[in-house]
Length: 242
Image 1 (cartoon, rainbow, N blue to C red):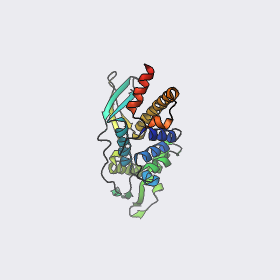
Image 2 (cartoon, rainbow, N blue to C red):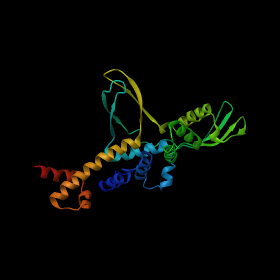
Image 3 (cartoon, one colour):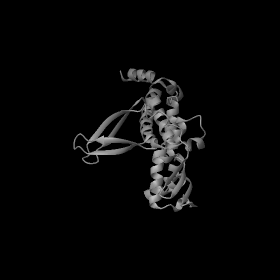
Image 4 (cartoon, helix red, strand yellow):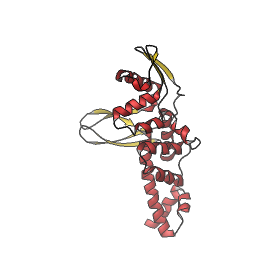
């Protein structure tokens, strides 16, 4: 996987800026997997998707992820850095699995980005949860009688959720936080698409300011400015500032 050059970074930013979070994640995934067609990207298990997105982050912005989050108890802002080397490593191959519990026999596949995009259109969280569970079930049998996945009970949905967590444990990465001010402890989801998007958004806006300043001063074309290395652009900007 290669880092996003300046021109491609701006193209990805422009394509993803006005999309919904679910659609944006797919656009970012396409940038992280240029060798795959769109439907293959959307079908990647979520654990693989997270690894690909963190891999693109690592190549483009470095191996340290800077996070800023408020304490939900007292509001104090926490700033931390975490290494993403392990997060950018692809997990094992994830294949469909059979699960049996309390008379229920299920054949499950891991969730993917297309599933999340479909769930984003649901009216509320319980409906989204049911849709995700239903889409992941390839076959369901209750006491040896086949049932439609949409007819599973709430308790059976819990079985599906637990099985999916074990099938693709990298689909959700939870971080543990402890507030140094009030001592409150909590967990928060680390979303690769969200982290990557914030970094791309900040870099794109910085690039646009650099292009504006250099084009205005030297009358260079945008394409020529973006083709320069970041180091060379900075040197020209330092000359202008001096």
